Amino acid sequence: MSRYAERRTPRRSRIGSVLKYSAGFLVLATAGFGVWWILTSSTFAVGRVESGAYRFTSQAELEDAFSEFLGQNIWTLSTDDIAVRLETLPWVRDLRVRRSLPNTIEVDFREWRPLWQVSEIKGVRTTGLRPLVMIGDGRILEFPAHVVMAGLPVLVGVPAVREGDDGVLRVEKNHMDEIMELILAMEDAGLESVSPVDFVVARDEGYAIVLQDKRGILMVGREEFSDRLNRYMTARDYLDPGLEIDLRFKDRLTVKESPALRE
Image (cartoon, rainbow, N blue to C red):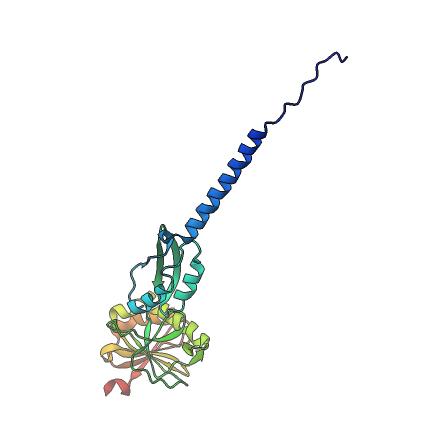
């Protein structure tokens, strides 16, 4: 006989095991029912798609895009799918899509803004009835019919190409880079605050800025726009109206009368 008493292994209760497995099955069944209810209940069927303020995108365009998602389950509906659909709208940019329980999708986006009106596009014949405008990614779009058009400088003679299956008209990339640089230089110099612009004409020798009220024509070439426009801003109070002012030569400007401004 052993000097030490051996501990007996307690016998498991058959009833206890049954209760344990039954409880586990009940938990799984409850969880499964909960998932099924979440994915099928009308409580989570998308009933509203909300957006922030917008201007250039029409209400009809948004409602048409949003209608595709109404009634779908908010948990199974991919926010990426919503973003891809809305990105087809021409003025929409910088999208954010969020779920708001139990049945609302919130869409927040910014819009492209028209930079310049576009006329006489080099190499392209246009027949649209609406004015054309250029936006920041280089696309040329019809200005929306539901928005009153503010006065914008008119870009004349810019080369453009049609791209993609839908034939979107786009300013050629090298010209778009120059144009964006010119726009920033005009803003930095404060040109339009003192001499509003009527036209920006794309020529072989560069860009010519035609100021309102026959104030003058600024020849700025294709580079160093900031230096050239700042040179004009410094000298403008000493210049007579109606002149063609060539700013392409470093540290100086030359002037001559412009026949176009005497008409």
